[in-house]
Amino acid sequence: MIVVTNVAPRTALETYRKRWAIECLFGDAKTRGLNLEDTRLTDPRKLALLMSLVALALAWAGRAAADLLGKRAPPRKSHGHYARSWFRTGFDHIRSRLRSDPLDAIASWQRINPEARKPCGVV
Image 1 (cartoon, one colour):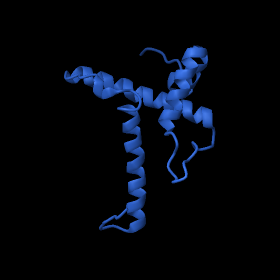
Image 2 (cartoon, rainbow, N blue to C red):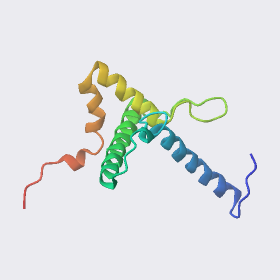
Image 3 (tube, rainbow, N blue to C red):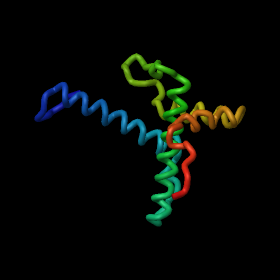
């Protein structure tokens, strides 16, 4: 790989690593997972709703992957990239749990932000 940059090389590599993680996330959300491009939605309100649901799915999959892996990172291939992304790891785990034990599948959803679910009174 040849990289041309006008910033410090380490900064450029860190930025590229972050961008690559985002590209993997988009790939999982599009062609390798949720197949967003197959929806053919054009109404902005419907697209906004779909994007909101996708954001919730990403949060749930991330929480499921964190629960499944704990402090470990997903396994890496010989070239150093993850064999499966965090999203894919969580997404596959949720699909598996939904088929076999739906209550266990929603357990990770319930742990996303327990503080936000505290009961509150109406003012």
